[in-house]
Every structure is written in structure tokens, then in C-alpha cells.
Amino acid sequence: MAKRALITGVTGQDGAYLSQLLLGKGYEVYGLLARRGSDTLWRLRELGVDGAVRLIDGDLTDLVSLLRAMETSKADEVYNLGAQSFVGTSWQQPVLTAQVDAVGAVNVLEAVRIVNRQARFYQASTSEMFGLIKAERQDEATPFHPRSPYGVAKLMAHWATVNYRESYGMHASSGILFNHESPLRGIEFVTRKVSHAAACIKLGRQKELRLGNIDAKRDWGFAGDYVEAMWLMMQQDKPDDYVVATGKTTTVRAMCEIAFRHIGLDHDDHVIVDPKFFRPAEVDVLLGNPTKARNALGWSAKTSLEDLMTMMVDADMRRLTA
Image (cartoon, rainbow, N blue to C red; front, side):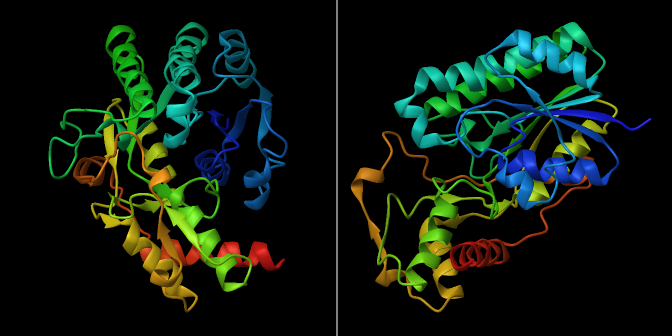
């Protein structure tokens, strides 16, 4: 019989790429659909998998709906990707972020524990938990110091996953994913904000791009690569936590340069630093050490930042000229 997977956050960037990966491996894929907003299925459509994912109405803040989703899907693997995932918004909506990202993860863990404790669980943890970094390269043993309500909420979810693993013997793993982007990213995220603006400027639809701290450094990879690491974690005999990253860090400024150069523009002519986009507490540098994932999972990032930004700019040019 085909394996069954339940994905929360199935309509997000990672949920779409993970759905595509699992369907390609012969899984039956069920996705939790929180009915907020207008068109939430565009990412699944863009990858051509919208008709293959079986959608179940539910919400991370509603334990009853999660219990029903577990019973309906009969999932062998549960991937908790759902979240309020934009760091900037977490300062404006800290309570909502805590309810969805922290308590929501506990709700999913409870649903798995109650309905089928043998199901394997994946938690989408984040490099934002490191925040004010305690080591030049962050790995699984680096102490956490989150610098946003988002990072704090995700840290609770991360430790809850460890706790359920140790308390109930559940196969519960966390992927501590560093920044991972794609043409499916929301336009509020800096990489997509840059790729979309570069395309708009090239087409004469706007003249400038306003950003905050362009000297911040991030470890950027391609989401399509990173969902493979999620799946590999679930295939291991024992659950564990893994840093998933490229092992390279680049400034926002350099990322802008790559994107604008690809379509024959100079970013210095268009990018403006605007203090209103600075965060209350900045995370200046993130740089992951993916050695454990490489050695234990056989995983490594395949897509360079140059190829990633080229892919994203080209996708935005296609959308804008369609």
C-alpha cells in the first residue's frame, strides 16, 4: 500500500514542493487547508499538483479539526509546515504568532499522539531560533537566542517536539532550516521582494526598491532542495534534529546585486535603504553548518544563490509579462 502523508501548511512554499516530492514517490498526500484569504492554492497549481493533493479543512489552532485530519488521512508521516512565517509580522501579531506557531505545533503533536502514536512527525524549525548567534557557524548544539516573536514561538515548538520524542517515544524530528527561497515565496519575503522589484523596474513599472538592513547576512538555499531533507529525516530509524543549510552566507546587498545584474541593471541605481524597514531587534548574521545532515542523511544543497535568484527573477518576469 502507498504511504500516506498529512501536510499542514500545504498551500505554502514548502508545502507545495513537499507535495510534489511525495507524490513523485507514490505517496497519498493529504493537506490541511485553513480557509483564510482568497486564492490559497496557486502554489499547488503552479507545480501542477493541485488536483492530486487531498485537502482537509482544518486549522492549527483547532485540535478537534487536527484529530479529524489524522483520522481521515490515516497518515504514516505528518509534516507540520503550517505557521505565521513572516518574521516582520510577528512583532505586529505576537499573540497570533504564538498561537499558530507554538501552540499549533503542540496541537499537531497531541493529535498524532492520540490518534496514531506510530506515525512519524516532522517539525519545521528555523534558523531564527539562533537569533543573537553564539557561534560563527550554527549547528545542532549551538545555543538558541531568538530575536523575534516568531523565533520565540518556533523555539517552543522545537522543544515540544523534543519533549514528545523523549516522553512518548514518538518518531518526532525537527529540521532547523536556514533561509530557503523559490519562485513560490510570498512577495513579503526579501528575496521575492527583490526578484519582483527587479522585474518591475526592468519593465518600467517602478523605479526603486526600498529595503531595511541590506548588510544583514543570511544562508540562502532553494526550497525544492530542502524538502528532500525533510523527507530523509522521516526515513531514518531514529528521530533526531538536523540543521539544513548551504554553509554559505551572503549579504542582502550582494543578493540584490545578483538579481539586478541578471537582467542588466545596477542595483545601486535602484535600491534605497529605508529605516522604517529595520526590525526592533536585528539578526545580523546566520550561517548554518549542515555537516550532520550531510553525514547522516546524505543530503546537501544543490542550488547556488546565483541560480536561485536567476530562477526567481525569470519567474517574476514571466508572470508580469503573461
